[in-house]
Each structure stands twice: as C-alpha cells, then as structure tokens.
Image (cartoon, rainbow, N blue to C red; front, top):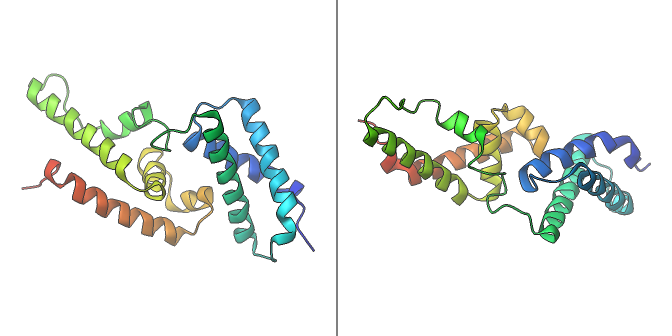
Length: 182
C-alpha cells in the first residue's frame, strides 16, 4: 500500500527549511510554503513510481525531490548562491574560523597574514564540489555531528564520513602553503 504524503509534511517542511538555508538563503516564509506545497504535490504525483522502500530510503527520495524543487525555485528567482551554502562571509563562518586569530594588539603584518589565510580557506571551500561544500559547512560551520548531517541531507552516516574525508584531503592540498607546520 502506498504511503500517504500527508503523513510526511513535517519532514518536507524540515527539508525545505534546511535546503532554503543552503541554496536560497533569503527566501520569505511564503516562498517556503509554496515550495513545500510543490514538493508535496510532486511527491504525491510520483508516488506510484516508487517501489516499496524502507523509511530511510523513502525520506531520502523526498529529500531529493525537495532539493530539486528548491534548486529550480532558486534558479527561477535568480537567487541561487555561487557557493550554494549561504554566504561564506557570514557571521557563523567568521565566528568559527577566526576563533584563534591573533588580537589587534599583534603586529599589523600578523593580522594581515591571518586575514589572508581566512580568505584562502573561504576560496578553497568555494572550490570544492557542492556535495563536499555541504558537509564541510554543516560539520565545521554549523558544528553538526555526522549523524545529524546524514539525516539532514538524507544520506548515510558513512557517506558523510567519506565526503568529509575527501573534502579534507582536497582542502589540505589547496591550503598546504598557508598552514605549513614546522
């Protein structure tokens, strides 16, 4: 027996909220409700195509629909961010990356070098593939545990670990000259 999409409206709302935060950061509540309704409608219309899946797989399918609708909405509105993660210049990033920067009592060249490093980190994150940007953002900036990231993105925890591993490797190569230890 097919699932009733109405029973999943809370999850759809959460998916859309999370995805709008990532892809369509400045959306209005009315926009999010329209997007949620579109996701529910598309899911309902395509329910007959879904073979019986586990709850996790079904939620992943709903998440993919939500991701596509939010992306399409963002493109139509012309508001999708190049980084697809909100702004890499926002307060959350600065709070987490600047934590160990020297105070302004330090010599100016030290402050300038620290700011240069921060900009290099931002650029390196922007250069990552979107799937890696997402997990880096959620793990390091929003400080979510791997299990919550997996749930939010509709993927397995092992996939989150793998994406973090590959993202760290790419960042290490790109940032090696800025963070040489020795």
